[in-house]
Image (cartoon, rainbow, N blue to C red; front, side):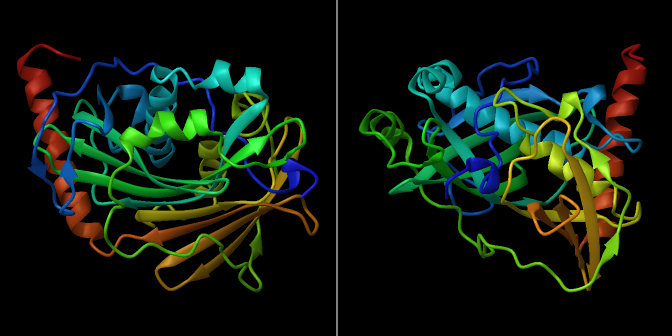
Length: 305
């Protein structure tokens, strides 16, 4: 493991985008759909789905979902004074190794949401973190599980999480989200269809000067048929793409999932993305359309555009 470029996607510390942020209303004891109690120690922020974040059907896009999750954990670290600037001074970084995201329903334009995150374990140089997005009624819309690696950026290798960092997060440690979560490592399917190459553009790059995690799914999503309703994502990052690199997507279609392998055109793999079809796609679409229509009527009555 001599070069982090060959192992992980370096986007654990990214400059957050501003989303009309405000603190969520503190709720001391609410048992959610998953049975997890929302506690004061869970880091959370409130936002509203903006027009710039939705697709043609007025649903929050999958890349935007991932942006909200990344922003949330970045805000938490910033508020603890162990964020972007601190890590840069220490020449250290959190890097995302893998994650799994489950979409119960895509939020719609104008809908108020609350984004939450909490670590649930630290082991050696690994950190484990959950995420959740709910709406104003406490409905769980998105759940996610992630695995992070703490990196020594000078030596370009994993290092044990420093006590100062671990101590800062320790009061925030919560329960792991229940349910079945897939393995961290993903396998490369046999065969597959080669898609047109995608150059790594400037807007793909984050503060680590590497391609941001959300941009990999943006590339992968372009290889998926429009009528494929994505209800979940599993991603493993193996190699960090840099500005000027070229990604070569290879798409393999199986029952209820599509796997997109992003390679350098040879044997090196940047990332593997598994996109799972939503089993309740028709019901999810119906609910989202109802929510979206309700928002449109409200805006029309209030004179909104």
